[in-house]
Length: 247
Image (cartoon, rainbow, N blue to C red; front, top):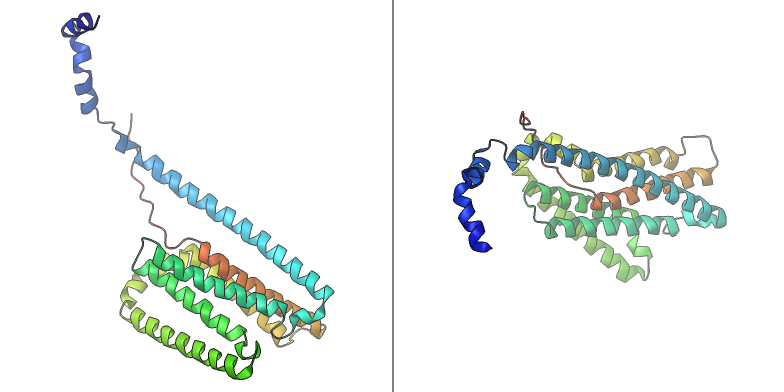
């Protein structure tokens, strides 16, 4: 049977030339690249929308929990109480996650610099929000606080010096940096911090306890957003659209 099939192939020249015709066809798999690229673009948009809904739900849950805790025990808004400790925990986790993603990812250069900058930003806020010297023995914890602040200040100055040598690269990619999901979420966190300032100064004519609750809740949500920024994406690659083949 096998010999009979082999002997019939010379009598079928069209079948023999079929591989050649396929190789000469102008419509290769690469021609379908535009569809895959645009599909990637749509996938990124869907992820951005999903991230937005997730953050809104997370902030709603956080605010509800904060209000319930305040109703149960009004002291949760005091210095170094539950809400401030939650802020410190979120900020410390945000700094750790941003640092881990900066050095564990395959990306380097500007993408890594963005992660490191946001990690230092979260660390600076952590040292500002948490009174470490009041967590225990004033001598020991006070010395630890000074050491941590001096170390953080040294790292920040080192990072600024490093970025000063790459200022042209940052300027050229400023639009991409500001559109990076991790930066967008961080800017949103800064907006929440700004919204908490009037309540801290008691600008509005409301009860002092309620004003302080608003301030602490907005700051908790800001810290939670900084934690979410650690999981958000970095600078995205440009989607290159190639003209689709005409059939």
